[in-house]
Length: 225
DNA sequence: ATTTGATCATGT
DNA sequence: ACATGATCAAAT
Image (cartoon, rainbow, N blue to C red; front, top):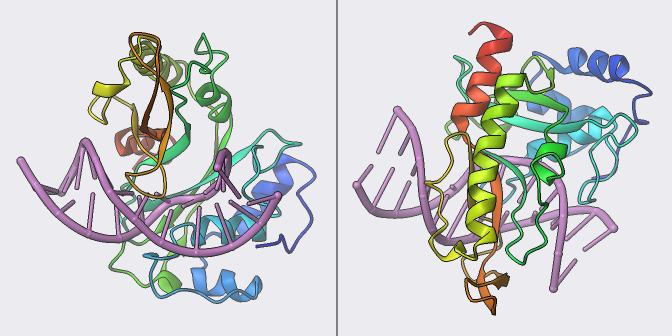
């Protein structure tokens, strides 16, 4: 999906565009973007995210950069119920098992990716046709001291497991706010990993995700839900 | 082949 | 209801 507008010159212009989208349905937004809307997201999981990027003027997706590189802002959609409850986890970045992970939290991809995020709530779960889901009020967020501390604690726990080569028993149950789960085309999607003995082995590709309880807390703290 | 965008589907 | 593990498409 190519962008249909120029990138916003600054954060306030970006937020102004967001205010223009709030309360509108996905069908209305898609009409502006001249994009057909799928009935459901089973085979179009990234549709809403790509659509909003496009109408907000984010640079092309699938690049290893923030969505608004000149502003240092990453945009993420957040599926929520009508009551504002977050429905899904949020993918952050890949979790390298090959020894290339940053040595400290401050240097990590997770820390950098989450330094400034534009959360775009979208109201409506799988029971609501995509076209009828509604764009919510955007939130330009920088993690609080408490949120940073919680994320850092989990990241260090998870990084330690990987650093020891113990990815074999690394699953989604680790981490209170941040977790690691499979990320790929299928469970057969393997990457190179360093074992406990320092040998190269193949293991399932994984990524860092924010648990819904984390993003739920972010919305609660900012919208008084 | 990889990174981006995520949600689906199943089990507890 | 919710968490975990599995999966889908587009862009580069």
